[in-house]
Length: 412
Image 1 (cartoon, rainbow, N blue to C red):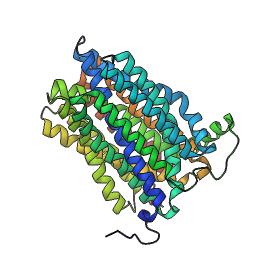
Image 2 (cartoon, rainbow, N blue to C red; image 1 turned 90 degrees about the horizontal axis):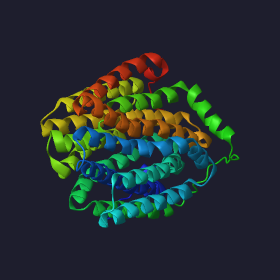
Image 3 (cartoon, rainbow, N blue to C red; image 1 turned 60 degrees about the vertical axis):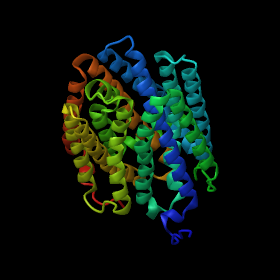
Image 4 (spheres, rainbow, N blue to C red; image 1 turned 45 degrees about the vertical axis):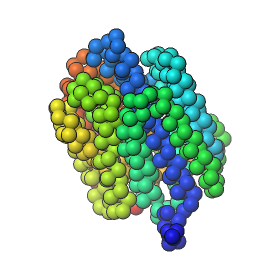
């Protein structure tokens, strides 16, 4: 019996549901590809390097992904505010399919090596530079404004759904063959492209200004002068840049907890289990009051849980710490994402999303690089614990520097 959703329900919006499916498939593919790249480059490096040097090479994957994004994010934001956002997504999916197909073939021919994997990471980063602002800006075009907060929670849930299944599935696939993991990611990107093709509503911005550097400056000026937007995205940048533990997962799995490739997949999934749990709750029960305080509390808990993860030598405790890391991060991400979307007009969404993507990617990819470098010089344990302490400091400092963000109350 078909489920009938009442008029005005978010799930009655067919175009939005297709968009949600494409987002879920794309994020699932990203996570599988990320697991395969991280494990393959570390395992390859460990044939001739010690733990600290191999961990540094894993960190280089983050830098390789971030470099093109740093160069292209702002122009990509202008592109998302100037051209059809659905068309941009389809081009990005085609590029990502080409990258994983190349990695799969190289793996099957035993030609995959660290330099080749780093080149693939550069190409992947370039594609994601255009994908992120177009995807972020398209979502609000498919729902009513009163549905925006709930749609952001479901968007996050789709992303976390991929992050839960992706690492676990990626760990199992890469244990069989890295090529199998890459081909699976390519199939998911193809599905995401197909779902995007079925979205009927226009993806063109309502106001299409001429492509110019002035549009880039306008977007930067808006972010800088709006202290709620700037405070929210810079908080995420600094907290995750210091406290992110993703880059050191292969090190923890293989040489600290000794749980192998499948255990690595479970560790990568654990934070997403916590994030998805919080996202489900927020989708049903959005935050009504004290949004700013909730966001800062989430960052503080994120830092504490990172410290626990760094000190743990017991796999169940490490998994539990990662669940808390994911849940607390999702709380702050939900508040930040909702605040930014609510205060940003549609003609500016692509550029603001590009700046936010630049900040978030700096926190993720440069955070991986920071973790790899720190592990090289002070060891992985000190790198993790020090990062958690840094996230705690950032939470307190930003609460003082951005009082308007701390006092943000209702997400409406």
